[in-house]
Amino acid sequence: FLLFAEVPDEFVWLGAAVIFASTYFIARREAKKQTPANRP
Image (cartoon, rainbow, N blue to C red; front, side, top):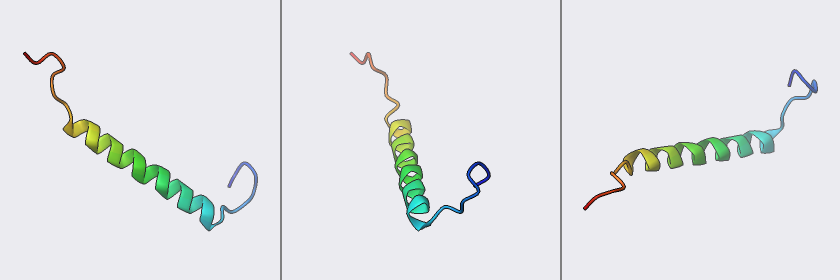
């Protein structure tokens, strides 16, 4: 907004929400998967 003096439309907000949600779910999945790699 400040750089180009334009207000983002709904598609920009929708895309940002998709990116944020996918990052959140991937981070949660990876945090749950914290198992040692060298299990006997």
